[in-house]
Length: 122
View (cartoon, rainbow, N blue to C red):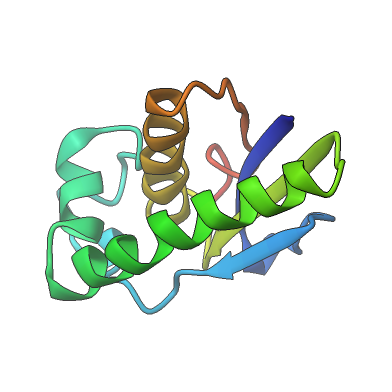
C-alpha cells in the first residue's frame, strides 16, 4: 500500500486526505521564543510538542489505531492511503507528529511519502 503523510497548518487550509488528525491540543512551540524559528524536524521542537503527558498519551493511542487502520484498508484492497496531521501553522506540532509516524511506519516495513506542506510559511 502506498501511504502519504501530510503535515499542514489549518490557517492555510487543509489538504484532501483519507484520514485527518488535529493536533492543536499539543503544547505549541510557537509560544517559546527560542523554539519559534525552528521546526518539528528538530529534536528539541519535537520533544517540546510530544514529550509530555498529552503527547505521549496521544501517540500511545494513535500508533496502534493507525497500524490497525492500515491493515484493514490493505485487506480491503486499497492501493493507497493519505493521512493529514494539522496544527495551527504547520511548522511545529504537525511536522513532529508526521515524522514520528514516518519512523513508526518505516519500522513496520512501509516507506511512506511525506509532505510538510506549510513548514516554510509564517
